[in-house]
Image (cartoon, rainbow, N blue to C red; front, side, top):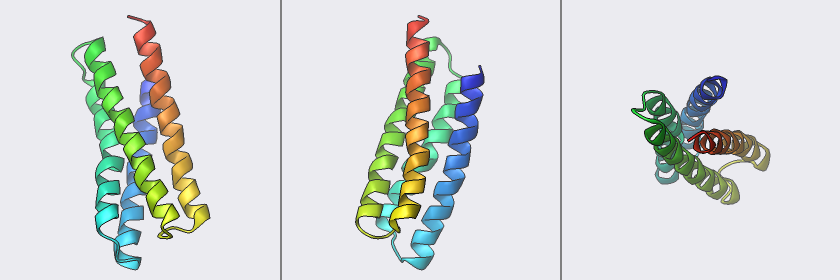
Length: 118
């Protein structure tokens, strides 16, 4: 399950990056509301990927990864909002957005592959 371990590693690294971004937003920009939303959705991705590893069935695995995909999409929304509202410099915001885009593609690929193996 190489894809699964890639998702695990990427989602964990992304969660750590989100934690640091939220610390920056709260300490430097004094932004608390959007950063809390970002923290919640950005760290949930990795937690759901880990939960999917212990799935009781293929359907449960797909379901948990689908929720992780939704959280990644929500995270992308908060990052877009923070970037467009000027809390991030364009380059820094685009860097984090690129990371979440990679996660979205990876999770989508794993879900499609898992569904085709039913």
